[in-house]
Amino acid sequence: MIDQDYVCQDYGDVKSWTKIRVKVPIRQLDALTAVMSMITNQLEIEDLSDIDYNTCYGSLIDEKILAADKSHGSVSVYLPAEQNAGETLSFLKDRIALDKLDASVEVSSVNEEDWATSWKQYYNTVKVTDRVVIVPAWEEYEPKDGEIAIRMDPGMAFGTGTHETTKLIFRLLEKYVKPGDRVLDVGTGTGILSICAVKLGAKACWAYDLDPMSVRVARENVEAGGLAGSIFVGQSDLLASVDRSAAPFDIICANIVADILIRMSGQLKGMYHPGTVLMCSGVIDERADDVTEAMRKAGFTLFDREEENGWCSLAFRPE
View 1 (cartoon, one colour):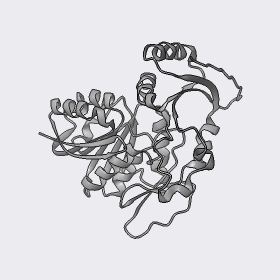
View 2 (tube, rainbow, N blue to C red; view 1 turned 60 degrees about the vertical axis):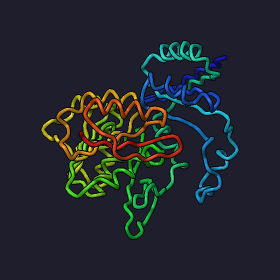
View 3 (tube, helix red, strand yellow; view 1 turned 30 degrees about the vertical axis):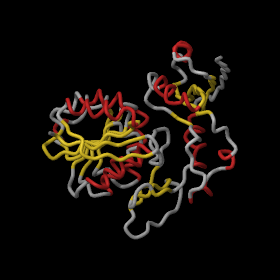
């Protein structure tokens, strides 16, 4: 049964968004994520079932999270207020019925400023690899010897660095980025991978995203970090609008989802040289073979893989 509660609020001159949140039992969360990705690849996924409450980070977990329902998860998308949410809801109703999801749907309006700031209480400094530490822009942190601190303000974009998909590709960047490398970052989000690559020694990065909000946020993070001279941020649908004069790249990284990575595989020609390392993340274990096969057809061979909690990051080289 679908429960739809539409709430409309007037924020005057402040831009507002329609939030559509769909909740399902945890066993159906992957299926729901696949459905929601048909609407947009910019998803907000809530899954408390895999939190390790016995880790040293347990003290950072808010009590509301500790008391929350862990048998269900949810996926949310945000649509501009001027976009017709009715079409999306109609699509969801049909897909939920077709896929037999035990789903509830909530619809509400969100003030852009509230959306951009309300989550900050849950975003803390975290060490994501042996060397890389992600630090919220509003927190004080003094890096220890050998640490690379990356200050981030995700704002309205996606990519705080704490999800498995980002942590896994950080590990690959840490292994394979060399001083002087030229990096292509596809689906940059907050710009976090490009910033990490430069901190690890890359000479220059070209970071692209289809979402104009992500482009804006990535530029702000790059400028705030004093890296505007090393990182170019632009808008592109995957590789369609990439500056071809900057190619070939030494590193190509993309933290997206399997289906989009597969689509990207057909656009890689001319972007790499024999020593290029192609890094793909955002892949659930069950889709790793699909991505690997697509890259094989594009002329790449898998040579390294990082895994955690059902996610994997894959590293390829040209054959």
